[in-house]
Image (cartoon, rainbow, N blue to C red; front, side, top):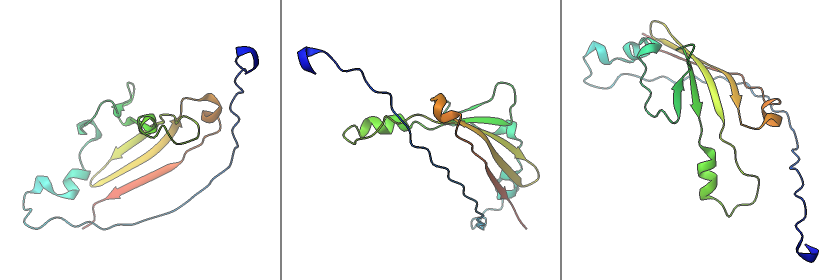
Length: 138
C-alpha cells in the first residue's frame, strides 16, 4: 500500500449454486458368529429408546435442551482447516446439524432438520433435507 496505508479489505462475495440430490441405498448386515446373547442383537440395539443413547464426545454431539429426540452434531472443519493453512481459499466454518432421532421396535430413523454454518448469508440460503432409516429385518 502506498505511504504505508492499508487498503480496506473487500468483503468476500459468494457464488451461489443450487444442488439437489436424491438417493436410496440398502445394506444388509448380519449378526456376528457366536453371538447368542439376546441383548446384543442388531434388533435389540436398534430398539433402544433414544433417551438411552450414549453421547461419546459432548464437544461434537449433544442433546437439544427442549427435546431429547433431537441431537446437535458439530463438525470441527475449522480444526482441519488450521492444519491445511498453506492451501488457498476462504476459512472453513464449523457447521452444526440438528437431527431428530426416533426408535421403534428394531427401526431407527434420523431426520436432519436444519444446518447452521455460522454465517447468516450462508445459513439463509442453505436448505438441508436428509432422512436415514436403519431397520433390523428377520
